[in-house]
Image (cartoon, rainbow, N blue to C red; front, top):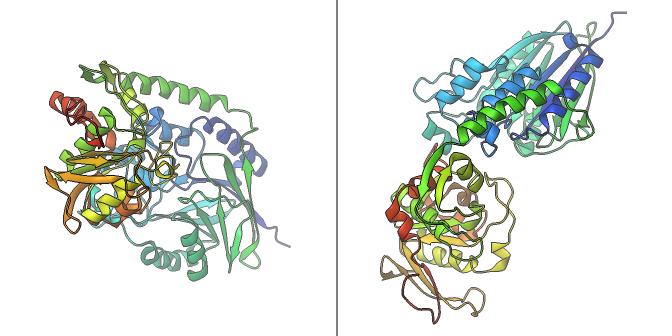
Length: 484
């Protein structure tokens, strides 16, 4: 009887620059590779390893993440939206074309200018492991309205993956899809696309402690933030020319000892990042106070910056995008990152006066201001109130819910219920999170690759903008009309 061939596949996803987990992840990976044998183990990452909220990432333009992936023994990765939408093509080319020692597999991200994948990306990859030919297909979530602004012609996954599966299936013994598409799409792919042995998932941060078995496909995922490593053990029967066994599980990393090499490597990169982020980017002549629950100069400054950046009549942003105020004096790049860590982009849209009024009313209610948010690029704590620019709101703090506002002036004129206003805001609201009516805007236009902290930095360097930010936009009944 011919002995079965055994292959172990290790996978991570959505680590989001949680560097505190990476030494333990590396320890788990090395232990599991040693158990199965290096030549019989394949190690993969399914995207969103990078998150620019972390100084180790931001201060090295992602090099820390690539260095850790290299040193931890990853053999192939695909990109998540946090890689693809956070960096320009030049930065991605440096990271994945020159820094990476692993294969970058992504089939649905051709460049708009050429219609072809960039030189550093592979639509699929075939590796020899344990005497088996293992085919890898990588695919990322499709956000055309964002990717197009960065020069990518991102393709619909279900247009691209099925023909690749049909092409590769006769050429490989095991076929794996590295899917940064989310659980629902993974389930759909398993059900609709025959020939896939294993789907390793990410994007929606789902943890599958037990794999899903859909048709002949095993669907797996390892949660988020590096809390788990996924393990898939496969046995291939040479006589039958097919997989005879496929078992999957996840291993928690919390109790694992740290890998000293990876910890030291992160520390070295961290020193470089700290030195880079320590540079002065602005100098404030005055202190810039901040509050999540009431109007503040720093919130006003960001709202005004969004209005000017997008060329709109009105600027709107939730105060929760900011995590603190700024003292008088020098402002470093690190201070700006800690203040505004979210990888959220400016956006311009059209909103009726009625929808604007609804959002303004919501922003006066504790259930909205205290609302915690997760995902959608948000890296803060709570939604907070609305910071505004280009309009003045007269309101009664003691009024009934949704009837507190007495009048709204836009550019010195009364708000008109049916008029469409051009509003500079943030992409997060277009996903219908936060203030509900802001998700009903039309004709959204996104501004990439700039983040909110880029908008804020421009305003911090403008003394006239700083002075304007102290002008009150929310006026309670009976309050003096004079600026404060």
